[in-house]
Image 1 (cartoon, helix red, strand yellow):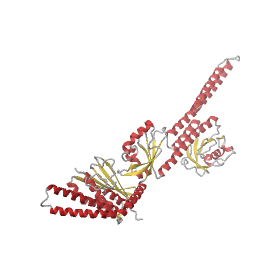
Image 2 (cartoon, one colour):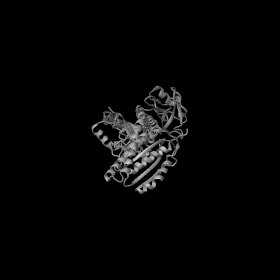
Image 3 (cartoon, rainbow, N blue to C red):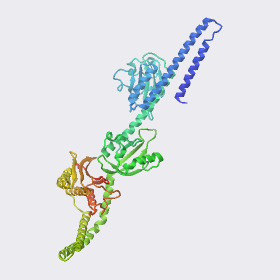
Image 4 (cartoon, one colour):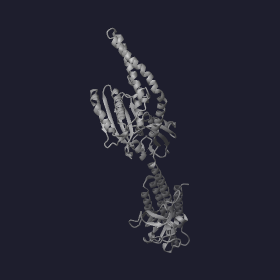
Length: 569
């Protein structure tokens, strides 16, 4: 039977008791009119007492219901404790009510909330947690303690807090906790008073509500501290896939503040194709229960504020459906360093496998190519006067192909060579500005608008200036060739998460899906060798950095060069 049902039954019993007493009082007995009048008056007084008791019981039940509702609707524990004290004092008619919180050492209770106490005491006044106080004695005996006259009390001594306010009578009950009591709820009067069993039950009921609320807040506080201090990003979303929680690690990882992303669709943190597929995945899971990410750890690609793509490990969990604010939670780990290290190991293994044969192979190929080139030149000279146009065109095509093979061989040698690097503190923004100065006129002539955005106070990086410049020039050349009808090339440099990031964004044709442009000999250009970006990534690897890109066919491509910021220490 619920508390509400028991209260309803109590009300019915009181009504029936009042009706019986009224019926008995109106009977006229053989004693005559005088006795009948006296009995009628007694019955009226009895009825009033019953009605007063009924009204008190109803007020007590309403008070418990009200504080229970407030415990569910407010996150402010201090406000809840203060409201509970006010409600108890009003309901049972006492001048003083208090919540004493047991401090961590377990020796002292602090006045956390209350009514009737002198100004400035709440939050500061303390009492002992032993037999020198009614509250301490309550904790020790583990049950409600009623004091009718503190002046004659022998079980414990009265603390100064009660004595200074002239308190004589009172009730104290424990506010329980999971591992230890939260504290004590007390109600007191300055006049001698006897407290009823129902009033004790009221305090116990309110204390039970406060116990649940304090434990819930403690759990929330512990969870919040855990979320705020963990090194993994923690992101929670509602049923509409809108972000409702974004911890400090997530702010650092994605370069957004919590205020910027709260209420936004979580898709903004995802690279393609995950961003486009996410809503359909959620809808399918809600409809069918088919799991793909929930309950597993997956490696996918995340997207930072400025569009940089980076690898993450993602673990998603489903939150209890009764919580309408949070539907799914995710723990996210940036594995850029791990992925970069793995890529470096693969790269080293690959180079080690081809290094021993490259020099010999290049030599064997280079000699015939040089001979072929010289032979073609001699033929062109000798056949100038005699050969027809068809023969001349054929020789020209052969010459072009030999030149292309020599270029490919040169880049292949570069790829496999053990080059030396001259690492020095370098300002990437200066390199970007030099390139812009060198290439601006050429871009203008081809209808390409150049935009440069450099964050002020950009930190240095430890780099080989010449090789980074070579890489950026190659990326700019690729962007230029992708915008055959003109467009916009944006070069942006900024700091993010202890790194310096240079982004080159074009509005060209983009890169078709399914093509790995970092694969050797893979190219989207008619005359490309397919080794330029491979060499570029090798340069970045030697700098302990990363080179990534995002592209949308028909709309353009963005490359991201990320190098760790230089710290002299």
